[in-house]
Length: 255
Image (cartoon, rainbow, N blue to C red; front, side, top):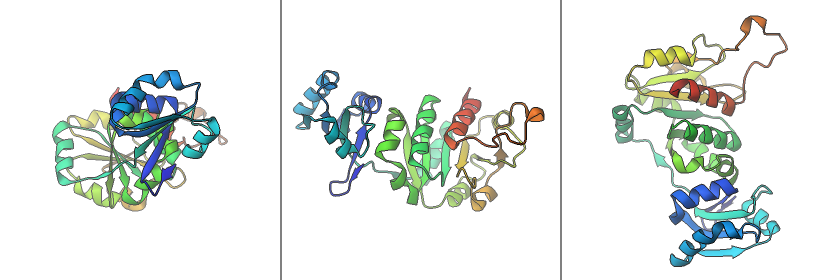
């Protein structure tokens, strides 16, 4: 839940808050927890007291109001709403120089899916995530933080004004790979072509896929092949949830 007056975001969930404590305790402005979870946050409370931060015991009902969810797991940390850096020419140059993988999310349309994608990206060591500027505020939410299970602390989130415009900017410098149900190639095939070229993976909306303008600016389109296509029945599900698909693609690309 976002506190618009104070421009704060509630981070809840035991794993998310503990990862935040370990990696960026300075971000936490206030901490609230139930009596049951109090023994887990003694060290953090000392840090907050030293830095003039606040911490309080709260009943579960109050934590639900603070976080906007019943899934707070007994702890809520308030942080300043994350500032999202715009992709610049310098950042692109660094990605190319370091041969880094970048994930571009094209209208995925769901903050929970965003959190799950962040979790998978962090697991596979992919740290650069790009959102269209109009979706950045939508996706960084209390629920996406919780579902990312601490993954937010291991990725860098950037924004672009236009997904298609960004892809034009990186043409001939990064391999632009879109996901599409009509594609013929797999990620494994693209990986063999990659050599030392950095890659942009574009994940699209579950219903409509990547947008036409984005598709036109891809170098390759890939699909996750059904493992037994010859035996597939007409009633079989044709596609995966975008977060599930992302995990498979990240695995194929990095392992």
